[in-house]
Length: 359
Image (cartoon, rainbow, N blue to C red; front, side, top):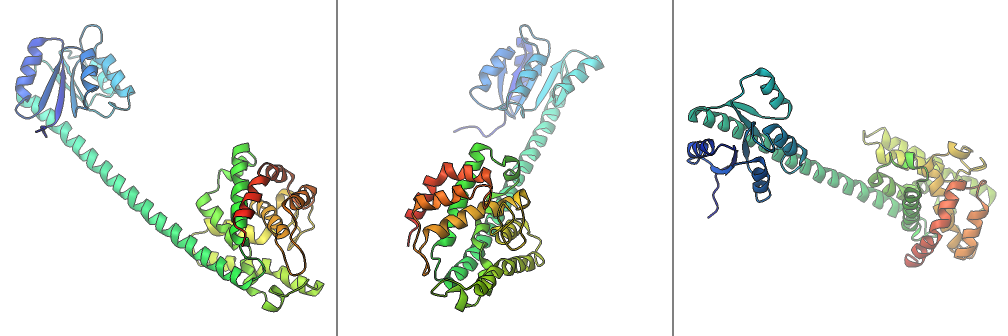
């Protein structure tokens, strides 16, 4: 049966000291004598000790060099080291502490003093491990709670987006597809380093689910217009356009009632600006170029592509190739040219998503 006693490595090139020290400690600890620093590192390859008693003055590799190697190795740096030395000058003692020694014991040492110093270090180690375990458990609890919040957040977003799609009977699967399109664009942007500084500040656990609410304002549009079996009149189209401001108002209201703004901020930009155009001819506010939030510029490509390849009562579906050409032609007018270049790299992925999520 394996011993549960703490393991101590005693390092000293003097055999008398090794024997004496081992006899003093063996009643309470598993003691492994090492006649050199080289032997110390050989022993450490087989198991991790709870404490090292290290002589300073040794041939080949002295205690100072040995502790430098210990502290440089992630496997051993947390093992407390007590220096054993016949040196009595203050500078030597300070040097040992500067190198990371936990304590200093003068030779020849007494058994009771040695045991008490070791006991103190073992208590410190035990307390540190208890704190580390507590911190780990606390971190795990926080992660679990965060996951619960994210799951709840995503469930709410999915439910609201399902409600929007249920009302808009002409755009089945649109929300799912556009979320996947945006993810494909963002993944490629990260790969190519496009707008890298801005994207690096985004939490994808918040950003990607927020895409689902880009059309949340359609809840406020009457069914007579939302599901009209034909092309909208200019007057009806003006009413349809108000779904953007209605969505912004709804999200803004939510933001005033919660402190958790990260995912709502993305949602606000996406819902409020995905119909803006690079040249300023979009709606609702006619933003221009990079004045349009990046979230909205991304959503514009995903939204337009899906609208083009989808059949409507007033139009047939465009082919993938036709939709791609329209987006390429819109570079610098409707769409951010840099994002159109990214789209060119993933247009095959868009086609795959459209194909695999078709109704």
